[in-house]
Image (cartoon, rainbow, N blue to C red; front, side, top):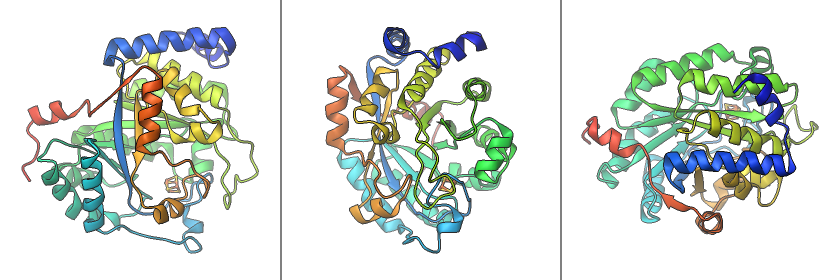
Length: 333
Ligand code: SF4
């Protein structure tokens, strides 16, 4: 697909958009069957050393936020709830801080034992040193999300106060260390151009990642972008469809931000070709403290996911990576 064609398709609506989505669903169903991978997420901490302009958990807010760290015991207990719900992908995510590493070193092998190794442990804990990634991989973490957020180097620096290059370096390290890697982008980020979204799509292909998410920008309170306009679901959905058409093998989540921007947004994400949904297992107290886009986030429950997947004519399934890990000989725990 040419860049010009991509630019055009990013803006389609009405019947042209429905045709785009139908093609995308066809590509998904050919590659994965009519299935949706189910994940369970545990939110480890709301402390972060990074200062992203769009995030209420940014470093400048840490002191005024009601901060928390889950203990290893609590993480394992929550992983037990995820297992009991029949979910075999445990997503451990949190702000970027090395303080979670000793906790994870304790928790990850225990989670693997809980599942008798039949588990994908997916991390989303930010930029780390290669040796730290190696250590996490050696104790049984299997996959890792590290979103590039925007492929425009100047915008990336302005929004995250970190370089795109450092992010990409971490992604390459993760791949070389043996993780399945996911990236992701924010659409309608203030200052973003349509061309840079085409770059985002091409970057996902160049990186050779296994997963890619798309989240519409949501202006959050207590951030420098609190007064910026909210992103639109339609652009985000068109990006999902284009990613699916360009790279049918990608895991693409239908994220909670789609539901937050517009009711029914996650169902439209599945219509557009997404094939992953994530159920939140944080306690009610921690859900309020984990401020991904402010306190009034949309929290995804298992019932919500089941209803939505059924209504879309799809079926839930487990990890697509576990068999591969088992064949390559995962670390004994
Ligand atoms: S988006 Fe992630 S890395 Fe950036 S401040 Fe928020 S928690 Fe930290």
